[in-house]
Image 1 (cartoon, rainbow, N blue to C red):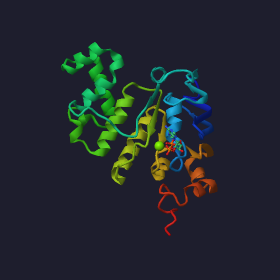
Image 2: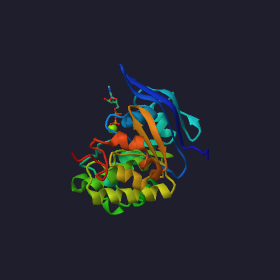
Image 3: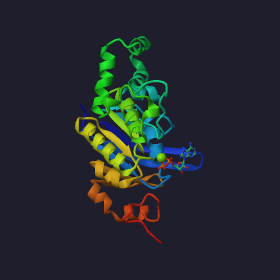
Length: 257
Ligand SMILES: Nc1ncnc2c1ncn2[C@@H]1O[C@H](COP(=O)(O)OP(=O)(O)O)[C@@H](O)[C@H]1O
Ligand SMILES: [Mg+2]
């Protein structure tokens, strides 16, 4: 295995006249959960869109040493790069396990249909393993409408995790969760990370990011302004300045006036 699971270098994205990303470098190493934070509009989602191939960018992206910069999104998924989206769309008339089966359709349509007719198969047991890894095996037969927002997020993560990606990119997985739910989510992510799935974790709840990640990268106006261990980044004056007056500021640092 190469030393770097995700190596993004010099990533640039323009939307018309807006330079949304200006030469962003970011690395995720084996076993690491790397946090990506920054004020609204800093370019966090654009960065995930660029590395996963959903927006055109320049610079280079390598997954486990393989250059994927010129590949389309599905090819990057095959290379081991998986992502979640800001909203979790699930099929309401399918169970949680069936939702994962549909998502894993690269297994082949026939095996998916066979799974859905209820026959035992290696594929279905892999889905149950995934649900177990994410800590929601008791939800396998539940329908999405029966789930809390926190549970839906975990199903969304399980769905991206089912492909056993080399790296998982999570865009604001804690958005809309209450404190208890986001603490639970953080614990589950940490466990998946410790079991060997590296992640890139975006969130504007920076306590959640600082509490979950090994390394944090801070973006402002499309540029990296700080990068390092949570405790170092947290006290960086540029980071504090970038957050002051922002909704995303931590409560103890927020300007209350
Ligand atoms: N599809 C788009 N077209 C034009 N501008 C965009 C588009 N997506 C994002 N932007 C702009 O790029 C910048 C970064 O946005 P985004 O990556 O969504 O920020 P974040 O996720 O950090 O809040 C913002 O100025 C935003 O308005
Ligand atoms: Mg965003």
